[in-house]
Image (cartoon, rainbow, N blue to C red):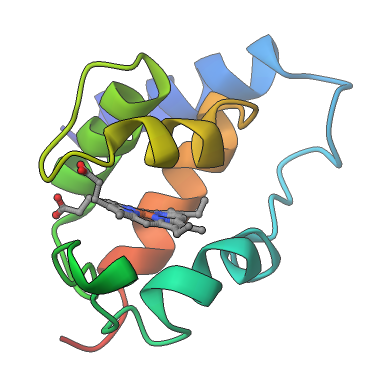
Length: 106
Ligand code: HEC
């Protein structure tokens, strides 16, 4: 488990080598554009319809963000809107955000 996670991290850093400030995805900064809807603590019901996201399991959140990116998730009819939020993010950035969200107090 640990090892495969490490492999994933290495894989993605190789994939993105040179593109971003290497290995220093600033999740807090990335999250700023999410905070307007989800709240800086992740507890706001975005647009009065989204679930709260604070403290959700990292992998679950990552899967959801990937699904939004691929246009395959639409829980409450605003999936397209969420897709536009994440469409330009790299796999590294999505993972950093998922991790950041998972560490928010529930
Ligand atoms: C304009 C408001 C808005 C912004 C900005 C926004 N979101 Fe969302 N988010 C929503 C809405 C609305 C939903 C529900 C979409 C649906 O119908 O599936 C949602 C859903 C989600 C979910 C799924 C919650 C669940 O448990 O099903 C996650 C995770 C999420 N957003 C994370 C983010 C992240 C990370 C960002 C920043 C990159 C972000 N959002 C930016 C409005 C927003």
